[in-house]
Amino acid sequence: MADSISGRDLDALRGLLALEPDDPGPGLPWELMDCARDLFRCDYVEFSRSRPALGLFIVEQDLHETRDVLGPDHQDAQFWELYRSDDAANYPDRTGDIAHVTKLSDFVSDRELRASPLYIEYCGAEMFRALSVSLPDEPGHAARLMLWRGPGSDFDERDRLLLTLLRPHLVAAFRNAERRRRAPAALTPRQLELLQYVAQGYTNTQIARRMRLSEGTVRTHLNHIYERLGVTSRTAAVTSMSTAGLE
Image (cartoon, rainbow, N blue to C red; front, side):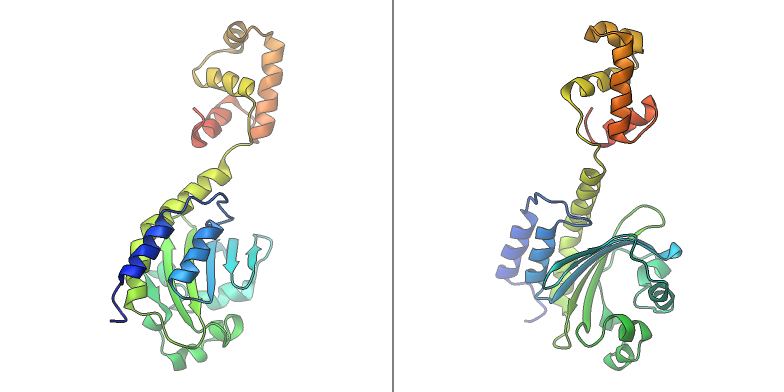
């Protein structure tokens, strides 16, 4: 049956789950998106992270014939105006449902889609079928993976089920990529040792004694640490270290 998962599908899904990407990518690992394109037999894979209420894209990561990334400098007020009036596009924001995998055809017929201003302006005839899944993100943020095909056969229930099974892995990959992207710049072993003393509540005098340094050198090391981490206080430095898993 076209809507059932085959043994080959399960093998491909296991291979995707076993991926250990070297590059977290700007949103999701590129290798994961490559495998998703093959698994779902789609033409175009798009991951976006945005703040819909503000009409702001944080990142848009596209995999088609090439890899393309649009950052926060690329904004389009017209897109967001059409987005807010399109029930299919704004479904997760409007309903709060980010758990279910949806198809574009769940919301509109082919005829309705061809008449949609959002589709006419931003999709065109090249991308006609879509399968979408949302990922949990910070309040006010929206993260979504969309798989696109041309005007041929629509995604079926086999595809919906596969993407549902894949969703927990996508969530984990997105969270891991965010942690890696937010990790502080590399600290030297000496700086890391000093920051660990800070985390334990030692004063500069106590740190200087334990590391056999002058207090002035401790202050200099701390200033360099602040600069590398992009912070201005001991508390913020320790928080950065904890967030990056360096404790």
